[in-house]
Image 1: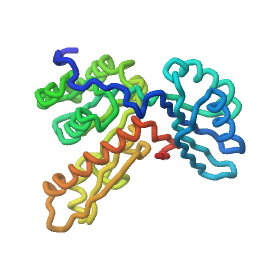
Image 2: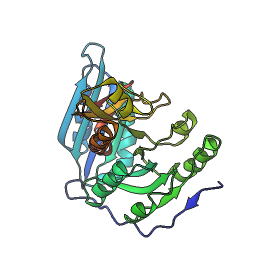
Image 3: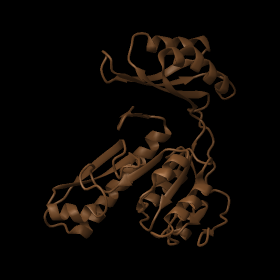
Image 4: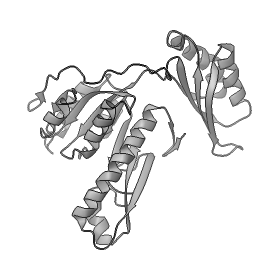
Length: 305
């Protein structure tokens, strides 16, 4: 694509390896219509394979005809080698009889993450800093921006930086270029104040969940300029919302939110400064919980264990 600049970065500054805590540790997430026998069937499947359940969290929207959600953490020797076979066996023996949706993962394998950003750097740099300090168990493989401004900061972390400019007339071309960089390479895409609306076609083709941070306490002040509109409305609390991205603007399933108290003395610039701290922490929690397989989507809401 014309206008796309490429950066050849040094080797990543962080090389993640499995911690002793995560070695031979699996995570199982399931959702299905609630009925008797679900937990017993899952536990029996793991017991028969010598797995020891270390943690189990469950929730039902209604024990009479509701939706059931479960997250189990288990330890099993030789998990990495056994996992592909276990997925097929679990599907046939448990998931199909209960009409389940499930994910079975090796906790020692970090999710591959790409970050999209515009000019605001606070959320981006906070994620990269936490990743470098090994506070986030993930693998940041790429940053894409529609501006060149943050190239030096990002490459300083050893992460490749791709500048893909976007204008109203070149939006489709820009999204096609971004898809070439992302498709099939990442498990999660994070919008760390990426000030562009992604098309439905992009979301269908990217092949990974997309998490956005919006600088308001949704559903209040969706769209552009939320701090200015909050100031005009005279609100006493401002917040931030991390959510999965859908084709409906700022309306996807919410993962995490937080607020901070403000006053009539605060102008829009001060609200922006105060809000930046909330944006950082809310996005970090959402990304961490997603990468720890703690979030299950239920229609347009989430269950977070």
